Image (cartoon, rainbow, N blue to C red; front, side, top):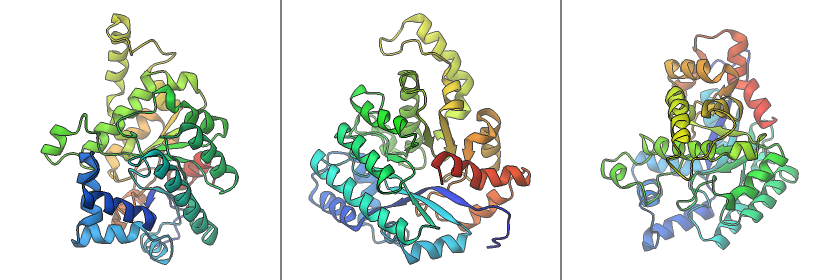
Length: 345
């Protein structure tokens, strides 16, 4: 690709998986001990299927070296912000989750040190141990040079609006490090109709699950408790930007009616938090009309580029976004400047 475009292309939702985690997942799938149909559906496809597409994705996930850099060069990507793929540690028991988060972070930090001009990392944690996760966020920021935190949405059906997880959010706010809220397949309690129709993962289930997670965070008043907390959400905000008017209207009506014990007044409208505490990326959504809409309703400074490597490694999609109908300064911010500011690159 032509690299002389006047900006760096920084891809901000790019995944990896340590070989040790891949092996652990494959064993869990083979022995049938995981009571999580979403994990079995998603990772059963990528971890055990020998077909060309899943096999290529699995190989790329485990590479933090020359193959990844060659793919970046072929697509014109200057830097990847790399994070542990879903569901990360969050499918494991507490002790294995803590150990795997440490291992993954150490491996990613080594790769970032080897390729400091190409790779930046996000800290993986084990939400099953919130206080330990907070300590790992500090280690990632201070010792490993990481630029944020990755949370692969729900942890065995539990969400970050639960105060038990708030030490994680407190640490992220205190360290001024953004949290990337990455999708996961819906938990057992909600996946049934989606799985039945083949809609449980990237085609729709991710947006259903992670959009709900973000909305739970907002309506539970998490941003009132942590006003400087910054979240980054992929796939153009998991459809929430397209619901802003209705979210505000129905939230106000529901609070006024006192219909749910769980829904109390919050300081601002849901849309206000999406415009002040949340950034969205274009991972897997290189569609100009949707990108331009999000820029309009959230603010141009809230929308940044991502590829979703290796799951959606389509170099032509980079060119599609190079051609967005915005001026040169806006394009530089979209591909480079916003990511540099949010992640402190």
